[in-house]
Image (cartoon, rainbow, N blue to C red; front, side):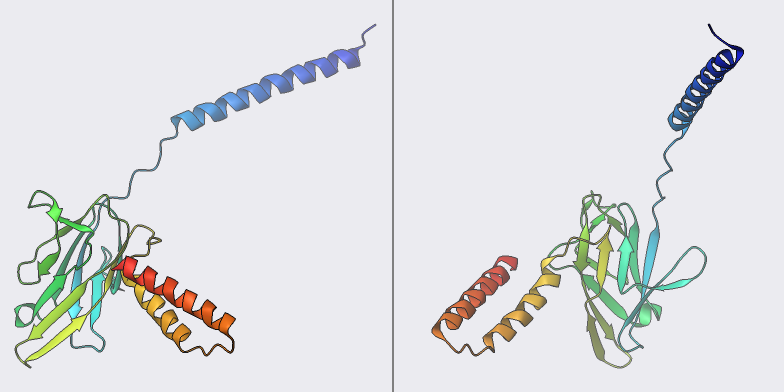
Length: 208
């Protein structure tokens, strides 16, 4: 025999079940309607090279006017990068990518862009397939002082977790030098040291 209390409990359970279902439906609809955040629009970076500082400085100015260090410039796909000298035409600079380049020339069928002359103001487009750390070389001639300046800054595309040979090789050479300085006290230790040397030398050759 049912009681009013039982009926009230059933009613409450039914209400909670319906309310829970409605809430779940609302959340599902909200998720379905929520759109992903729009992609960050591409950014154009103009790197200013200043050889009057020691070491050479590299800076970019963001949209708010703030100046940032660009010695290790972080970019993403479809961003644009160009270089200029601080004193304009008084100094002539060349940017050169030796092993690999993250840039393509949008005005030349997206061909890889390995060299940029600061006098020509060529803009490089960051290739969609680029990722990692790219070392490039800067050579600047100052006709007012007849001095030449060189440097090797970097461009980091994406997270920069991919380490290229230019980053690894100096470390391996340092370790190899330290291993060669070891003085094993037994023939067994000598064999182990020689094995380590061989492995390090093989790794360095594979990078080149």
